[in-house]
Length: 177
Image (tube, rainbow, N blue to C red):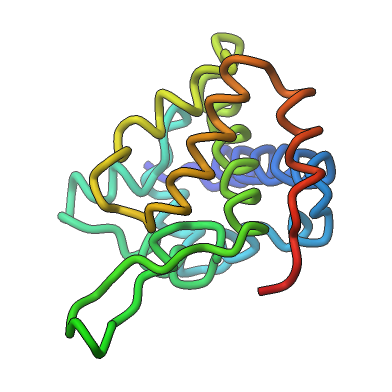
């Protein structure tokens, strides 16, 4: 059964949390553009169809069909996903991870914190985004420099809290790359 209203509320609440986090991180305009593709029919319709409320609808779509077309659309349009940053290397003749610009690593951090808060609700702790990261750590899913920076921010959040982490992030160079 589709849940378009619940899905709309969830993605909008998530997006608003990301916008607030991006403002705290010094990348407000980037936050305002965050995840707009989720409102496109290609992503919204499957999101409503596979909505569960406690995890991404893409997970359910993958379980049923072996892949998620909504996710493939999403990751190809949103630079804060490390999956966006893969390209063919003509020297090695293989697909390789590309280092993400710092501003998108920061947005990815903001996104992960917001998603953890949405999906974990009142049970959220500052360790949750790091626990989620551990699922992929060391599996060559992202460029080593990208993984190192993301881990540093998530560990700082876990150990020192939001105030100190966002203060650190605001000092990072965020030039357009």
